[in-house]
Amino acid sequence: MKTKFSKKQSVYWDGYTSNIDKLDLTNDTIAEKAELSFLLDILGNCNNKNILDLGCGTGKFGLKLSKYFKSVVGIDISKNSIVIANRTAKFYKIKNFVGIVGDFKDQGYRETFDIILAVNLIHHADNLDIILKHAKLALKKGGKLVIFEMNSLNILFIPFLIYHGQIESHISWQYLRSNIFSLKYVLRNAGYKIEKCFKWAWLPTSLYNRFLYFKKINEVLNRTPILNAFTAFNIIVCSPD
Image (cartoon, rainbow, N blue to C red; front, side, top):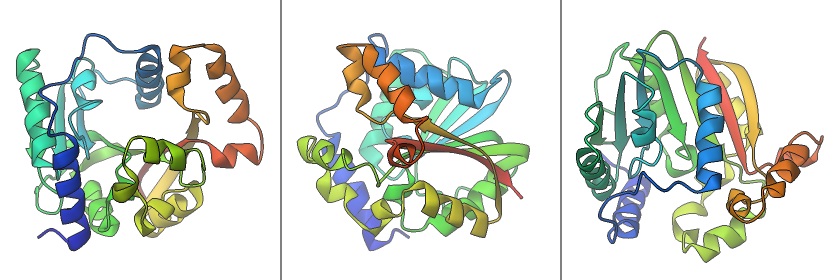
């Protein structure tokens, strides 16, 4: 059963995606290509592996990852987002992707996935302990949970969210929790071993589409002590302990 918070999230994202017919998978921007390349580097060898895209939305990542993985399952609480993801998969004849509506409480997966990917899911979830519990059950032996999460300590997100009309769906305790310190604490308490941490961006990656030098600036900022605590995104690779 959905909580009040998850119902609110579901309604919001159903509305936010209401004008989308299907995704365009053929015209990635420079920023989108850089983001996917970075993610693939982290995921490593994808051959013959099964991946769960948890909180997949309209399939922005899951559909593209289908090119590299044996199979991709996308789960999201937004029914409209899943309709769009499956419609896009059908249009592009992507046969190894399936989108499912759900909150990951009752999917029943057991040792099914080599990788579970959660991109910007944490700040939309109020039942994180249940999600992490079921992720453990769904991972194969040696499987990895990869969290790619926006950092609430990066103050540039506030004007970004205002500009895109997403303040209502983001400003919450769940959003404030989505920083590297809280994430590590929650994961360790849930019985996960943190293996690697990465930084992604600082300034908006959309700037790459105008001037690639911004990519170099981001790389420097993410290597700079103290400043790198305010990176735009933190990526944590972990496994059941």
